Image (cartoon, rainbow, N blue to C red; front, side, top):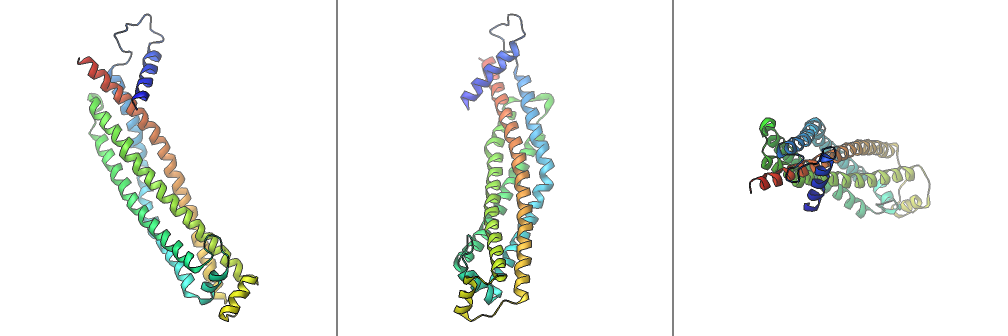
Length: 268
């Protein structure tokens, strides 16, 4: 970070002085007040984006609950039909070729949903803390230490919580994709007379699947694909705002730390 600050300082000083005739080497091209103002501008952009995202973030809680229901329905579909559960047992379904693996997939997805709920709460709390700290800043009378402290909090805590939430959602997306692939393969098996289905029938003495089984699979497949599309949209939105926030927070840290250095130098 120190190297970044030094490099930024050189660019700021040289860039700011480029048009000045014979500048004094003892005089900085930007004073602490200007740097604090620039840092505040970037933190203001972060605050604005966080406030705009509040509705989107609030919808995550509802989505997580709905997603839990989708996983429960998927589990019930496997358990409620002897025919389907045995098809899953003998069919080489991608990602979940055996019932035991399917059970692990369900457990993993539910665990990921719980982790996402916790990550969401942490991100909401750090967002609220940042916004409360930003609202306390007075643009007309900025203190370099206050701006630097808030920028550092955003860089270390806010961005960390945002990244953890992104990671949790990506894990859910991965396991949801596996569920979708499994359900599609089950659907294909119920509509075919493959050797694997024949093997399942020979082992358990099952007749052809009924229409109810096929309807359950079709409904689950549709529900899972819908949730997966919604989830991916949320991930893209979160990643987009995260990129903008990382840029503005990095800028704010550089400006505020430069302001602190100038203040410290002027007091010597």
